[in-house]
Image (cartoon, rainbow, N blue to C red; front, top):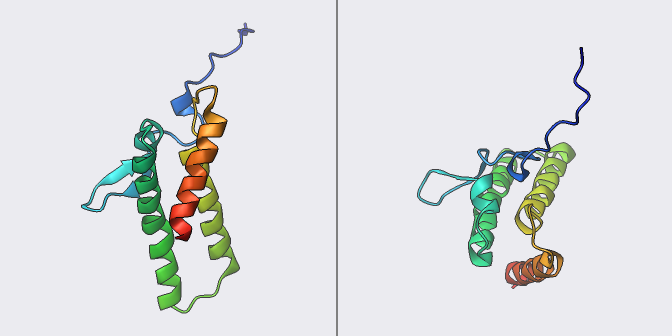
Length: 117
């Protein structure tokens, strides 16, 4: 006998990357988790989380490639995809308020302005 009822929808924290997965390393040691990023509404804190992630997984990885004189399109493409995923997790996380599209766009533009200056 089969059950024909629809499964319960997953809570937002279980869609995509689980909250318990490491997002970056803290400056003094220890991990920042995806749940920490998703649950923190402060734009400055989220920008700091992004900076830590970029340092942890992008800059250190890139430095390794340079030091070993590795030229690999695959490595660079993985780093680009990780960066795109990171921006999505920070600026377009779920659940979102109704006006989040405008707020996320503003936060993203402020972040980009800080990075380029």
